Length: 305
Image (cartoon, rainbow, N blue to C red; front, side):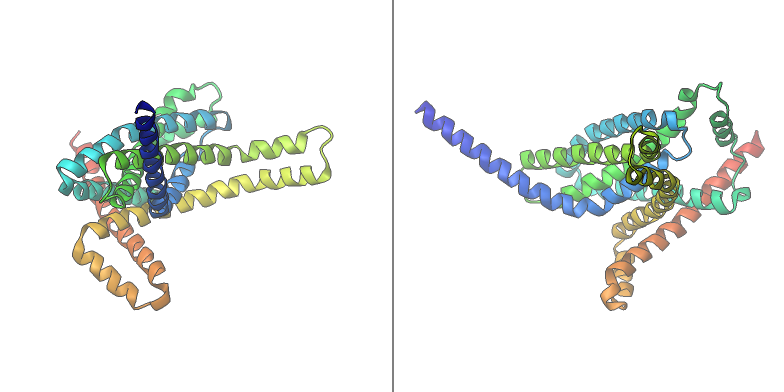
């Protein structure tokens, strides 16, 4: 009798794990786009950091990302059960923040004089150039900013995954979200760590004793490609802010979502690409408006002081 009960329990566990595996695959496919954006954004976050501090910064952000997931997974389950209507407003706030961050990067790159004088950023640049400065303290703000961005993208990943599990039981939702959260954290930051150390790998291959000509050429390629890759990721990361931020805002406003869909339909086979581009332009426009408001508030406060 006991043996039969044990076999039934094992069979139930096996069926449960099969269900979780299938649902995890579906959720992973749905969140793949945001995961790609998350990778680009987080690789971009460590640009400008000294080589000796790259991995410590990645590790610090990864730990913060793990804490984000520990907060977000239970919170998403509780909100979806008790106050499901709150999910959309929270995502909208996240979309506004991402759009604002992207707009700030664009304006700072092309029209820096339009923004308030950023003494903190200049101090970080000076610290990177000064060998005697302890960079750990200077990096804390950069890490905090990266963790804030990760929190929004992590929330988006978890909510999208949750949307694929509407008919699942609470235990299945918990297990699938946990798997997605762990995969997103360790997968993304593992890849980021590899990306930021590509130049070191290339240098090692070039300087390795007894290395063949092929190995040295590969090393030289990696060394020369690393800064270009980081530059591309910086651009992709900024674009991702508009795509994700704009997408969240569009999906949160029914009339705007229908308008985007109608315009995208006019392009036929390019409907998906058109919808994404429209989301990106909307994210940029809204981000610039939010940036304008924030800039005016900052200037008003500075003049008052």
